[in-house]
Image (cartoon, rainbow, N blue to C red; front, side, top):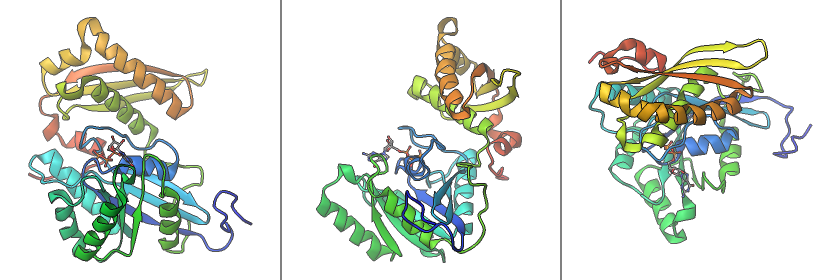
Length: 309
Ligand SMILES: Nc1nc2c(ncn2[C@@H]2O[C@H](COP(=O)(O)OP(=O)(O)OP(=O)(O)O)[C@@H](O)[C@H]2O)c(=O)[nH]1
């Protein structure tokens, strides 16, 4: 049997494995995962450091299932939450079959990329280099960058892509599929992401919050889905809480006469309904929790380890 989309045989042994996608903030990890999976699983934003938890996209290619681990950008962690994110990112890379380094070709090699290369050197995994945003870079510069990076650390393969436009994404999918070890699939065929819908819904609301309030809100604000009830008519009644750290921030989120929160809720409701494929009634609450950044329960909710100090 031949899969019409890939031209590959779907009989024969199945393959399955993990790919850890590593890159500096804004390199385009979320965009690439979405392009590989073909469905919205990870939040894309112009704000750096929006990806807090490990979000896995499950990519199918012929007989192969590729579980992609989206990692937060690697950066010098100072605060507790930042350290938890970084530990979680590298933890995932250590278990993966292939580590894929995504580099923003526009930016080239900066301190961030150098720091990642230093850690990758000591990692006994197969490594691939993916140069992203080639739509925004001249060819010669691209080739120089590929040569420079391979001189610093020899990669098993180098790809040049535009995650946004889709150029080169199919080849990345096919090659990664071939690199996966033989074995049974870990996830059911129709599952594009193992992120529970509740968590995805919280991420969508957080995205709308950031889109609306830009720099007025520190990124410490977080969203949790408290309740998800399926009603008799099949619609979902969802309650979410937006946590902020100060009363002044709560006022900003609510807006004059509740205007801001209503607009955020409306935008989030539409997108959650699309993701859940059902009608959604969304209820948003805003709470001040000064100490959430030091509360282990909030970290567990985001799938992160709570660092001891
Ligand atoms: N021109 C161009 N822009 C891109 C491409 N891929 C991603 N971007 C843009 O780069 C920005 C960052 O993309 P994200 O996918 O959010 O980056 P990320 O690495 O997941 O970022 P964090 O989650 O913050 O770590 C967004 O504005 C994207 O639209 C590309 O191929 N070309």
